[in-house]
Image 1 (tube, one colour):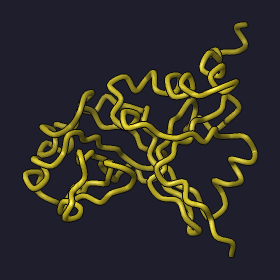
Image 2 (cartoon, rainbow, N blue to C red):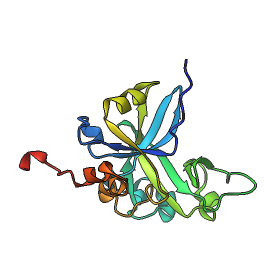
Image 3 (cartoon, one colour):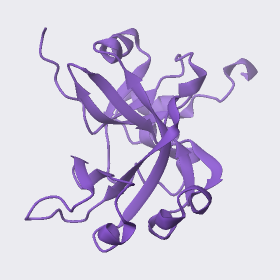
Image 4 (cartoon, rainbow, N blue to C red):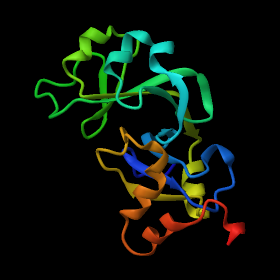
Length: 189
């Protein structure tokens, strides 16, 4: 099998042509990408469910908005959390946190929150995830379903997730920035 260049830490931004309603105007952070497949979370799908109602022990550490986000269409009955550990640790990762990209990492929600409370500056909890079989994401990229762009530190914890699709596109160079102006319903033009 050919070696796959890792896209971990990059963003997938749904193109207007992407027909899957699960990913309409989605912004996905890739948490893992290798020759075994890809895994990510949709960053801009807040739910009306408060963190306090589902994982009350983690509510005090959750960023705004303090709701559960729908991370994707797979395994909606499971939760995963992303958090920032500012500056990184010289001795290694804090117990209960695994680095994904830069200062962003996955939090072990089975760990006691007190263990990480002093280490984290942001926390967001996701129900479910998005997953791709080996080669599937690469095919979708070739087909034009996604724009692949660099992530920025504030993307994961955007206080206005409903505007994330447009803001990520707007900061791109060239014609891609124009896609941010694409109407919600092009048939009304």
